[in-house]
Length: 142
Image (cartoon, rainbow, N blue to C red):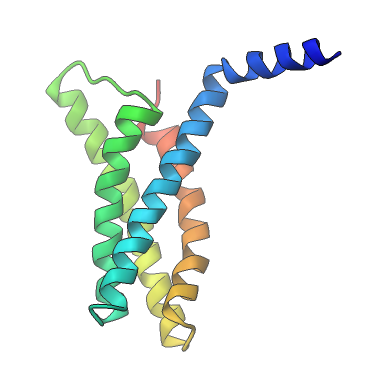
């Protein structure tokens, strides 16, 4: 029974879809760390306006996300410059949509006097779900 369980776990670990999801979750965590880290540094020690700090943190996170998702998660290989431009445009366009949602959402929540970091956490849940859906089904399609 234990040997069967170990074999099953090995089979799951070698499954490409499982590995992709694991990589996405890991890179997503790092991307979130970049976003929250830059936001915290700018909003608190630097004492920057939270909305401006949020814009800068989202831009940094999106750039980080494109490079890491392309290389490590989806292992995307573009055969031509045109393919790379289309892929990058698709990624940044979809992230532009979620960036507007994130910036607007944090602005609205902080305007309602919800603490800045709490506002960012609330909106980030929605943004993370949308980013996964866009990346999986629109940007890094096979």
